[in-house]
Structure formats: C-alpha cells, structure tokens
Length: 465
Image (cartoon, rainbow, N blue to C red; front, top):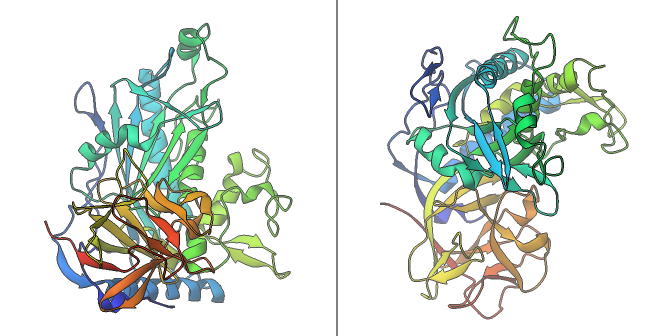
C-alpha cells in the first residue's frame, strides 16, 4: 500500500487501547430533571506522546492487511480479545420545527432504555462477541430544533445543533459514535400537532446517517416510534426484538460502509437487502418475512456471512472478526497539525461561517486521519463533523475546496500527502488528474494542476497547545 510523503512528517496524538477492559455496567438512574445517565464509563483519553504519521499509517495498514486476509480466506477465527466500542446515546425528549412540537412520554423514556440495551446485547451476540459494546444513555429535556433535509420535507436532528450536548456528556472521554433519538409518534404527539401547519408534510426521517467512521466520531439520528405489539417488554436483550433496535442497527451499519474503501474489498451497502435490481450480486430480503424487519440481513452482514455473487461464485461478505478493530475512532487518527503555505502566505483555514478554505495569518488546527490506500481525511479540530471537500465531487480545474459533512463520495473528501520536496507536501486529489490544493492570500482555495499560480506546497507541522 502506497504511503505518500509520510516519512517527512512527525505527529502528536493519543494512543487508543482496544484491549482495555470496559468498566462494569450500572443500572440507569435519573441524575436530574434534564439528564438520565446509563451504563458505561469509557476510559479517559490517554496523555499525548509523540509518534510519526508513518508509524500510524503502518499500524493501520497492518490491521487492514489482516482483515483483508481473513476475508479472502473465509477465516472467521475470533479475536483473542473483543474490541471495546463505546456509544454515547442521547434521547432528545422535546423537539420542534416551526409550530410542530414533539415530546417523549415517560413510557418513551423507558422504552428507549430497553432499545439501547437491546442494541448493545444483540449486536454483541450476533458478532460472536468480537465487539464489546458499552452504551451510555442520556436524556435531554431542553427544547431542541429539528432541521429540514435540503430539497425535501424530511426532518432530522442535525449534529451541529446538538454538538454542545455531545461535548458536555463526553467531557474528554473517548466514544466511538453518537446516536441521537427523538419521538414523533404516539397519541399525544398526534393530538398536539394534527391541526398545526406542516403536520403530515414535515416529519422526522425513520433514520439518517450523517457521519461515519471516516469522521473523527460517527453520528446517526433516528425516530423512536411506538413499539410493535408483542415485542415489548424485552424477553431476552440478546435477541433483537424491537423495531427501534432495527432502526438503530440499520443507521449505525451505514457508519461501517467505508470499510469497502479502506479494505478495497466487496462490502455490502446497508440497503443491499433491496436485491439485484438496485445492488447486483445480492439477493432480496423482505421485511417481516425474512426475520424481524430485515434483521436476517443485518445479522448476516455483522457476521460476515452475507452471500454475494458479483463474480459468479458465492462469496461471503460483511464484518469478519478482524474488521471490528478498524471501526474504533482512533485506530487511524494520525494527530493534530497546522498546514502552512511553504511560501509564507499563511495557514490553510476553514471556518463554520465561511466553509470555503482560505489562507489566514492565524493557524487552524487540523485533525488528520489515515483511511488506507495512501489517503488522508482532513477536518478542522473545532469542526469535527466537517471534512475538506471538493465541490460537487468535480475533478475540474479551478473547482473550489470547502468544508462539508461526510457525503460518501470518498474521492472528493480524501487526499494524498505527496512529497513535493524540501520537506513540503502537495495536498493532492486521488482522482486521475492528480490536481492539487492551491491557494492565494485573500482568495478561495482551488483545485489546480501543478504549476498553477499560487501556493501549492505545504508544510504540515504537529500542533502542540
């Protein structure tokens, strides 16, 4: 696997110990009127110590090769120790959009606690305990606005809207993903909203994935809805028996899809249950006829045993045991850096109020993540849900480079750090053109061919507070 220019750089960052034992669980208890906390206590982030980008990339590449080898040989040998995986789950009990007002009842709170437990235990069981999940559940009673999906009537809970709550609950500890849940179903919500403008037109999406393992931390949001008759209370938490559990697993599985790119193998889209018309090589599954709400499909993916016939012969795809080690948030985290123009014009900068990248006299701290195949993802430390993004995924001369949420267009949101000489690098698109990030003071950052006017060489330096 090509590692471009990484030997030129040194990094400062935090190690992640996947083999650390998680703390014992506690029963959920109500902390105050605003927050209810549940089981789990992930380790605090370890102290920083120096390491090189090359070393991080090499270690990640080793994990990648082991996972690919298992896949190619059909080897399901379990891990010696399960991967410790931490989930921050937040129930937002009161959400609004215009006049629309949606609230959770006391029963909804109780039901969400069961859903979180069902998610944790059933995924562990399905994955043959190659992953050990700890869910920490909180409830927020503050009135929180929903966001309308661009160009559609769907509503969802945007990560940027709730980031302050996420930050306060995490408080320096390390979580691998955040799940957020609202409730728009139920008789009380119907009665409260049925005569209001927009009811029945604007409604919360069944689920929405907004960030994945390509980001510093995953994020998914979805609607709780009502339990189906006969499925609640839980008879056995290890059996996926709640509809909202199915939704949670579905949205979370979207976060795992970048494994297809990282590993360079066939890995199923979470919607591949739709069958060959939409996903050639995959068979069709029917909700509620093939196990509970596509859960037969989800199980096969999480066990690495989903049949795929793209090349004619049957191949079994999905999560092989060694792949679980690659979904930890810090597995491929290289560290925090400043990116300085080699000609001294300034620092590469991205801001929330002006997402197009520019040069600034003030350093911007970037988080750099290695994603395999010689590629890196660049995100501002202060805007962890944003990635450096090639506008509309167009590999065109002069196209703008901005900050954007994860889109799934990996070529548009990953970059090669290619040796430019003199200790500098080009920030180069993986597209065939090989164009590079180019910037001039007072102008927008553009994608241009090497030799175009402006700063094209960059000095990537470790950031130390």
